[in-house]
Image 1: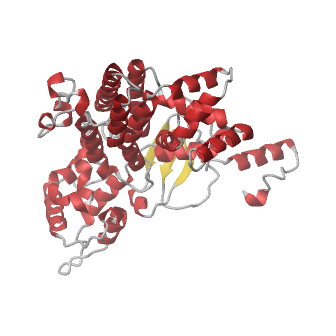
Image 2: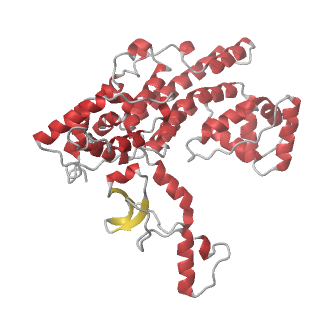
Length: 442
């Protein structure tokens, strides 16, 4: 596909990559420590799910420990942000949970696994390590799940993600002045000793407390440190191999961010003219000279920033300067540069929007997705990104296509929702309308 059309941009599934990075790192951690915190959260959630008696008994232990009772959260492995919250909830009620499982004598396999886990003093340390480390993953994941365009932040945040993980187990001198792919993170000489690993302040304090109390041995401390190091090294390895850190397009998108404009050059804008030649007809020397002039004026603009720079709306900014005219000629002052910026802003920074649509539709969604029905992203009108006008429709180019268009008109080719499909099926069969899905609510 790329050989026939080099202008196609394939960004993959960044949300899944971050999720899989944590998952593969967790597998390394489990092989050494013998405990999988993800499995533990699932067991805890399902043990209390739907059981009033078990919840009531746990509430009694909470009262005994002078702790507020809180419902146990149910971790779902495909919900990318749930693990950190589930672990935090368990840690907030760790004392009552430990007393609960030690006081009962059940024969179910899940209960026996939970008894073994809460009888091990190191379990609390393992969970605290996860609680301290997972925010590095969730912060990047939250960026990927934004609805507004954020592609200009993606390369910098991915680089920061890798370096944050490296800083937890590497010497600062081994990181300074190095690109991500040049970091020698597997070299033992560049790694911190076990007692200096950045595993979280509370994690380290709990580990030292248990050691001083004689609840764990020095060998168990070393085992934890080895497991933590393996987690971090594997996370960096998987992230570097799978994340699109070498994608040139992502590096060149930074110029649309007002806060990064002084760090960029006109070559960033010219990159998109060269790559998307049919959409950006500014190929001649005169046109490119004018792009350079517009870019320099853009860099020299005095742009007021809000007190909180994170609230600055990049899409609104480019929409507003597209209407600025030169006071001398009366022509658009940034006409070419805004066209380039609009194209950049319609490029997807994540696959979260598509995943969100499929989750909302569920199994009743009329379009049935499978491995032979690829989803294509067509940008029929790049200017529509500033108006946020989206429509999902069929296209002759493939079984199912998500198209970005400039209006909300309803067409016969528009993909049907579950209710539309059910109504049409009943009409074909001559069946009465389902009272749960009346036609006037569609």
